[in-house]
Amino acid sequence: MQKAIFIDRDGVINSDVGHYYIYKPEDFILNEGIIDSLKAFKKAGFMLIVISNQGGVDKGQYSCEDVEKVHLKMRNLLTEVGITLDEIYYCPHHNDVQKCLCRKPLNLNIEKAISRFDIDRTQSWMIGDSLRDIAAGEASGLKTLKIESNVDIRPFVDRIVK
Image (cartoon, rainbow, N blue to C red):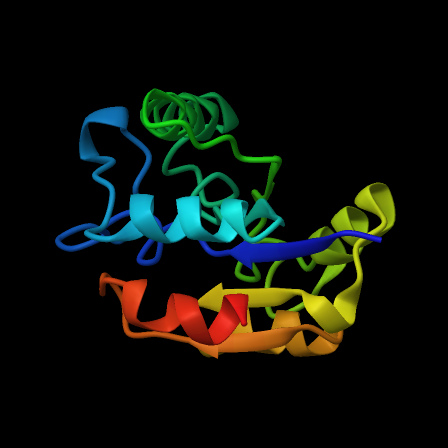
């Protein structure tokens, strides 16, 4: 079995200051400390799996293609510094339009990853900046870490890797 860091995108990996939705590659800016943190998680043997709500798709604000362009920029920025994301799962739905099981606080996307990659829940974490993120992690039996949006997560890395 493998261990994993499940991590929210907007507000945790990248800054969402000044934006409700991040759907343009030019608006995607990595948060301070995220590179060092992700490297430390990888070095400690964790898989890195992004779990993100992208409800603006369902609301017609942007498209899945826009989301994929942002994800390509994120992957490229991280690859340039030697970090590979193992997978990205996102929910394009919004409760105002339709109900689904993949939108956090529900945990279908986490469960898909756990099954696909044979992940040990007891050794894995969900890191997020909202109660939705934490609820999804807890529903899947993960350890959880709630942070403030757009903070440097380096101070929390040792707590997770030990």
